[in-house]
Image 1 (cartoon, rainbow, N blue to C red):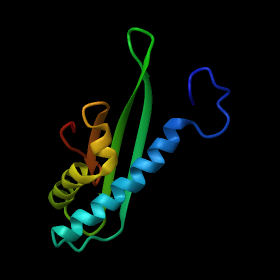
Image 2: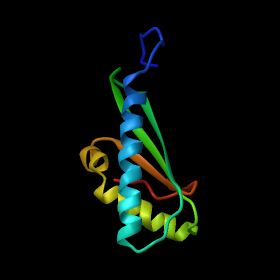
Image 3: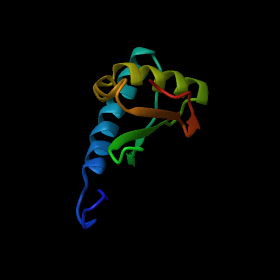
Length: 112
């Protein structure tokens, strides 16, 4: 929950995670089709954290785990990395928010 809030209800970080994960899932699906990969079920787990900096301000960080059923880890990695290049949320946050990626539960290098 947001610092200083009662903790009740949905917070902005949860809403951002919902939007980002839905958009990223569509990007994964589009890239799988573009690469000719017959992907099974695609799921995305987005974790958005509200962090405090040394000056008492706040910043967001995001962890995305794209899981693609029916493909090997190398293929999943390739598709997730490509999806990160075309996803509108990824484009909007690039250079502003730390985003880390996983494909099928395996860490990828830190994403820009």
